Image (cartoon, rainbow, N blue to C red; front, side, top):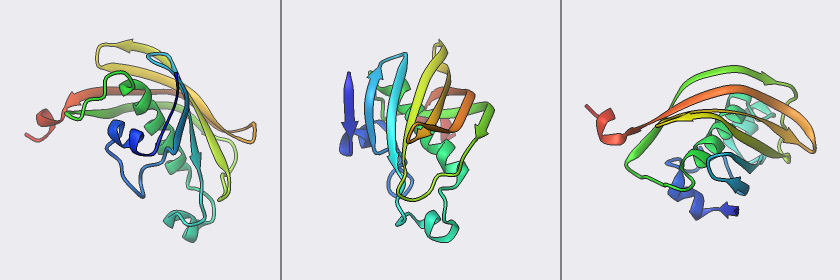
Length: 146
């Protein structure tokens, strides 16, 4: 299955501007893999002060792509995805305004509401970040408010 963008992504992610960090999904195989894009703009508040796109936000953008993969077939507005662990995350190159980041996310293991992902991010065919493992779990939003 291919592509979703804009308002379609808003149904799958709770994030809004300026922290919605995925612009488009290029390709998805539900339960297996997803490819998404993030266009980095000089107008983003962090780029104005820092110049480059902060590595922590690059990881956040990749993690949002992972959430999209985990909720692609079953969007649930009553559910919150929590990140429990990250391992072997490496930043290889800076990402500057004007770059288009291509995130590749793959499911390593899924057991109920807990999913482990791996993947990488590239700009113009160059790896800018690798992710060894990110583990998530989904919980009912109502359970988190007590």
